[in-house]
Every structure is written in structure tokens, then in C-alpha cells.
Length: 112
Length: 114
Image (cartoon, rainbow over all chains, first blue to last red; front, side, top):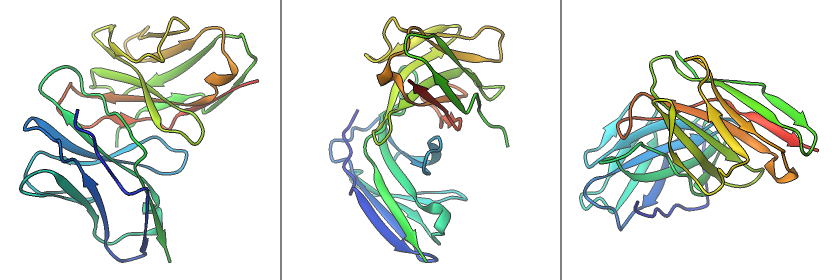
């Protein structure tokens, strides 16, 4: 699986958009980009995933660059409850069971 | 909304004792996982389970650990002869099929070995 690089921490004002970057420059054509988050002491929570097109759901938007070497998770209107560690995971889904493998992620703090 | 349920939420055990952590995955899911997270560290994969057998396991998942789906609804992780370093949050997860979609995680069991 391709390695990902994320900033260790970020902060954002409540009500503003939070833009969390992820670099995955060695991504291959079969690898999807997944985002999870972990609110303190809780289990990880799936947010969104994509292959090459931008994706949006009720939680967030995922913007993947045309060369697929980086992506950005956007929380359009961050709330205090979005304070969490956000994990960007790249995974080849072409064989075997899907096993999310978590790195250090980005610790996002949303402040009033 | 369906969810993965784990019991107990907190378990304290003496070193050398056996513990069983229980999970009820989402009912129509077929793939099950156990992860652990030592305090302040990353979430680490332990094992995945499908069709009543282990499909993948990590180096952490040694002979001290075993998993079972005893009755078609529960999914258990047994830790034999617990050690102090087994103290961690243990998360169960399930997903509908491999390689296709997101995994849903439970809220975890905090295991404390004293």
C-alpha cells in the first residue's frame, strides 16, 4: 500500500471550513483514498473514500488531485465535535480483505 | 442506525488470567476485525475473520490470542495468560464485504491488566 503523509496537527475556528491535506505521492492506479477519524477514546469512524473523482457525503468532501498524488478532506462547517484525529489511508482493494491500517493522522482541534 | 456493540466497556484483570472480549457485529456484515490501541499510540490491526476462519493476522496476534464466532452473532477475542503490556483499548469492526466499503468500528473495550 502507498504511504501517506499528514501534518501532525491543525486547528480551525468553529463554523469555518477545515481542510485536511494528505500526501500519497506513490499511489498506484488501483488504490483508493480512505478517510477515518477517531474522536478521543472512541472507535475509528469511517468518513469518506474515493478513487479519482471528488466525493461528497453528509459528513465531508474529498478532493483528489488530478495526478492522485494528494487529497484534501474538507469539513465545510467545522464544529467543536469535529475535534478528532483524522486518518488518511490508501488501500488497494483489488484483492483480499480490506484492512484499514492507521498511521498517526492529523489531530484537528476546532476552537470556539 | 446499525452499530457494532462491544462488551464490556472496561475490563480489569490480573496478570496471567484469561479474558474474553465480546463483539456483536452489524447483522448483515461478513468480515470482522479486531484492533487494539495502547494508550497514546496508533490503532494496530490484530486479525480479520471471514467464513469462520482467520483471513489475515498481524505479528501481534500470536498464540496468546484467539478469535471465535461461536453462535453466528457474537465475535470474540480471547487473550490467554494476560500480560501487563496487553493493557489497551480493543476495537472490534465489521464490514459487508472485502475491499469494497468502509469498516464500522465499535466503541471499544478498555482492558487493564494489573
